[in-house]
Image 1 (cartoon, rainbow, N blue to C red):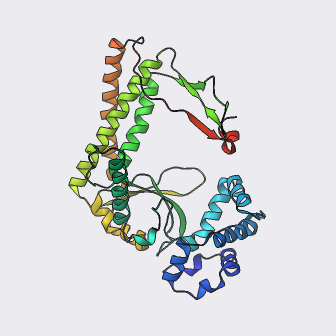
Image 2 (image 1 turned 90 degrees about the vertical axis):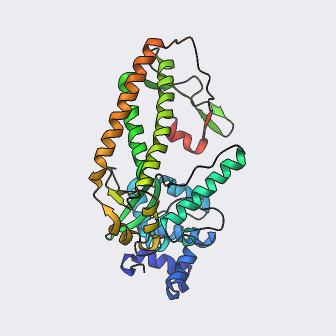
Image 3 (image 1 turned 180 degrees about the vertical axis):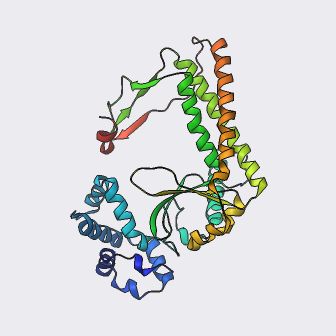
Amino acid sequence: MCKESRWSPVLRRAIMRVRPEYFGWSQNEREHYTVHCPDDDDFRIDSILLKELFGIVATSREETKAAFDELNETQLNLFNETVLPFTGVGEDNFFLNEFFVEDKSILNFETVYDYDHADHEFQEGVRQKETPSYVARPYRGVLYLGWARLFLDEVFTYANLSMVAGYLYAHTDEVASEIIGDLIPHQYVHGKNHGMRSGNGFEWDMRVDAGGKEGLLDELRHLQNDYLMKRREVLSEIWDGNALKAIYIGAPTLPGELNRDFLFSDKTALRAVRFRSFMRDCRVIERPFNELTPYCDAEKQAVENFLGAEHERLSKNFDPKVVTLRKKRKIIVHEAAAEKLLF
C-alpha cells in the first residue's frame, strides 16, 4: 500500500478539488484511475499544483505545457516529488516513465520481466514486419536506460533501469569516445546551414573539425560502433548464461537530483522484482555494486587495445581521398526548442 504520509497538503487539496471521491476508493481503484486519468482531470490537477507550488496560473493545456517547459531543475524535481504519491504504484509509489503500447499500463505487468519481455516481443515484431528477412534475436533482457521515479527509503529518487550488459556497453561507449578524442583531437563547429529555417523548424548542422583527419576519425568511429554493438551481444549472452539473479544499485553523480542505477544481471533477476514491491524485492537479490568494477576495467582495457590497434593500422593505410559513403541524416530542431539549442 502507498504510505499516506507521503501525501503533501498541496497534493491532497488538488485531488479533493478535482476528484473528491478518490479518497474513498480502494488502492486498486485509485491506481486504475491514476494510470487512466482522464485528460481533463490530469490538466486540472497539474494546473492546481503549478499555482500552489510556484504561483503559476495556467488556464489551458498549451499554457500548462509552456509552464512545465519553463520550470527550472529544482522546481521540476519538487513537482515530480509532490505528485508521485498520486502517480506511482505499490509500496514505493513506483512510476515507470516509459512508453506503453495502446491500452496497456504498468498495471498490466506484475514483474519487470513481464514488461521487458513484452517490449522485446513488440520491438522484434516491428523489425520483422519492416524487414521480412530479419531474424528475431533471442530474449536475454533488453532493459536499457529505463527511467523511473520512486521513494527509496522515503526519499524521492530518480531511477535508471538497465541490464548489466547494457550498463557495460554504455560505460565502454563513454570510455571509447574519450580514447578517440585523445587519439584524434577534434571539435565541433557550425556548418553553413546551422540555424537556417527549414519548414517549421531550424536545421541542426554541426560539423567536426579534426585538423584534416576527419575521414580517419569517421572511419575509427565506425569501427568503434561496430565493435561496441558486437561486444554488447556477447556480454548479454554471457550474463544471461551465468544467471546470477542479482541486482546492483549504484549512485551516479548527477548535480541537482538524487539518482540510482538499478542494474539487472539477467532475466532471472527481472523475474524476481515486482513493480508493486520494487525495493523490497531488489534488496533480496542485491549484490555490492563494486563487484562490477573488474568487468568495467576489463571492457575499458579491451576497447583501448582495439582502438589503439585500429588507429595505428588506419594511420598507416588510410587514404583520405577514398571516402566511404554512409547515409547522412538531416536534423531539424522544432522552432519551440531552437532558442535554447541553436542560438
